[in-house]
Image: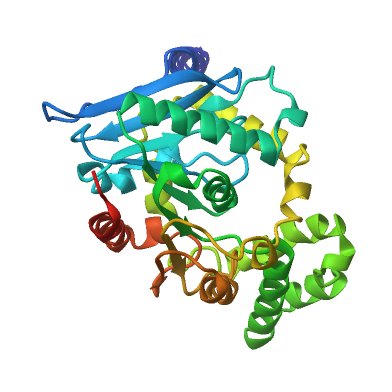
Length: 359
């Protein structure tokens, strides 16, 4: 009998815990933490809002200590991969810019289960970005803004600067995409060489089973890409130092994202992968397509980056004609110097502002 009472008591306790956790889960899902902390300054802005862009609701985060500072629009990577949850790495930039993070169509807080995969294409993303830039110029009473793109965001960034050069003080490419397939060729050689040096037989076997990326393979390259990037990541070609725990803690502590937003982020990434945008990326050949840009261009590139290889960015930098250009190597970073060397990254962008800002 005593054992039965003990069992019933434990069952009651466990049931109570499950009910409590379920209540907390549902509350978090429905209410969430979709807010951004205030900034203590009389001229500051700290706004998390959803606006109609391209006919659909899209979420932007605007933060800065002084609304009179120039606007810096951050174009996240992916496609379909929000970076708003990493905004704490931009705290220093918020003192010098009005920093705008935008969850692009289908990404994170801008995902909707009503969204169709065929609306996710390069032309639409560029159109959305231009519409947002026009809104920001009007809102902050400025003719120009700063444009920074990371990874996939650099594809949008370059295309925007090509089409609408008068909108920008400067362009900053971070983890610059130059040519997806040619970059994959460099990545393949890096992975195979590293695997041989480390005698990683699993990697060697898998790479030998894959065809080496080539423009002649067309969309077949996409089948190779996923496996290749996994090994690039394993061999520190995406993240040079292991910041994973810090980055995860930063993401989970992002008050702008509720649990439901994390679910949306996952669903949006899946929707994007089922769209045509990845196939369109295979047509990016900036070495031939972008001989010049008519605004100052800066390339912040991790020297250990084999996601978008440094050597390819260096070639692009050397040949492109611009009014002003600079390649800034980050020697302790791979694909994300804005995270791996966030303090230096902020100082670089602040110097770019000093060199180019004409209020």
